[in-house]
Length: 385
Image (cartoon, rainbow, N blue to C red; front, side):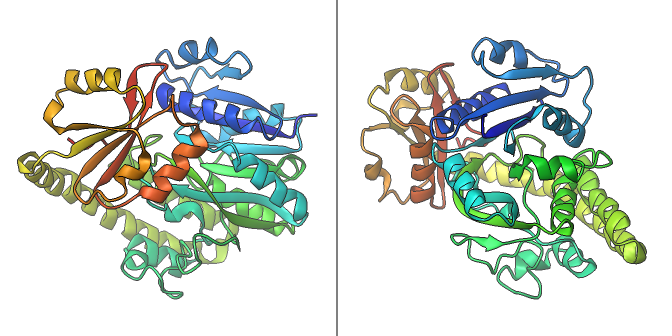
């Protein structure tokens, strides 16, 4: 019996998903598992592209976009393993990730689910890796930015629990749906994801029901990469509306007596955040882009034993050869102080090494990218020019 069924919902992310699947295969060398990919009617060649490359993966093609919760439930129904891993298609896990997470579950029978330390593609810690339930006060602080202004406060920063150290394991209320390792029997017992949540909030709701059933959720400091914003563009007005209305659905379901108060807070916050989003996208971003164009270009460092074809790709994309440098030893980038693009060659590093490298060497104005040798492309969500 395989121990893990990995369920991944895809929507137009074939190159990111290919990395995810390759990293999962790498992790299966330590823990036996199977993978199911549900495509939510991407409308491109995502599945045709991936099916021939991953014959051991089960692919399901939905004829419409049924949402994150419902699509995952399709995978849950097919799971016959001890654990289910909910994983986003814009993540990279390491060879030790599943082994270490399963080991924790085996040693903690009271644990219903675990989440991990998510870092973005440049090594910055993502605070949504661990969260509390959205009480009216927590929601107010989150929605109006007080938790960002006072990130270590136990009063204002309770939504993302930022006062809990990111490099230590903690019992936490809410885990992120980008990576949730669940006990299969428990997940099916509590009914999987609530399909009233089309996108966002379903992970919070499932975490709540697991705790209500008497289990404990844990955050573990196991690093993975999550290219946040690739699944959804988090600055869009639609995202703001969907995300914060999901909080109201949660309140109406679990805290009906105070849902009216939360509704007022959420409605006010939606208007506030949408105004901020408009200001940012229509005014601030164009101004910032203007100054970036005037600024000196970042140098690009290729960490590879075979950099020539990477150089050709960069030059074809308009990068100046005067700003491209070859680096064989990753330690050579440790002392860089100026703006730098750093390209890691997947022919020379496995995904565990890539994750560890990005986490260890992350610094302001360092932008990491991965050269996908299988496709001769450079994968990065926000490349600096």
